[in-house]
Image (cartoon, rainbow, N blue to C red; front, side, top):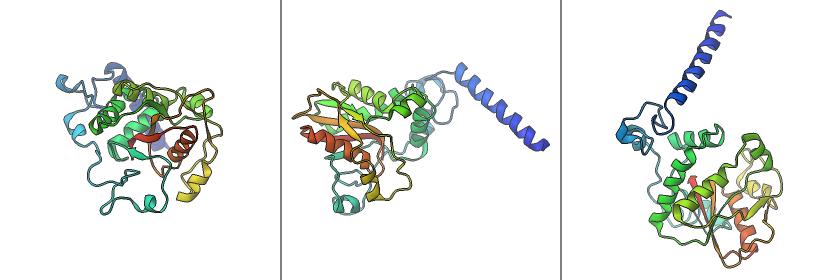
Length: 246
């Protein structure tokens, strides 16, 4: 019992120390990865050289549609059997390690300063591909999620990418129903679970436009595919998905 009490006290002191460190060393002064104080030469990118070197950039051969890593051929097994509604999906990172931590620190931890950091990588990645888009939009969060967190992180990401690429941002989609927990669903069931979940914002002009659709991560691609289907039904010419990680 005494050991448990000591453990609780130590945990409370650690939380206080972390809060104090955050207050004393704001964004740009401590490494986003390990939390160590940054030397002045590293403050612009907000990562120490070691953590920056460990970012899980996507490299190697990827599926020509969903972007998942593959070893042979042009498409992954899933896209060969079932073509999603979006035309192509891109992501600069694999969803693991430091990037996974940063995404969770943003959406769960509420560290909104990470938006600028993450969208910087997303924008630079797309600039390297030299693709043209008419409008940037986001996969909409549920009203419940926004109320709980106090912000819509996907819209913030979309606005950041919009600014980084110099392409207009517009809210094109509404979420009609509550988000379904897809973590325990199989691949095909995930697509069924999101059917009818989205609608185009009324009086929105989409016909003939090329759309860059933003989300944080792409797993099965079911949500992005459903959003793309709705956008194309409204006349979108092409829908490309961009996420932080895949």
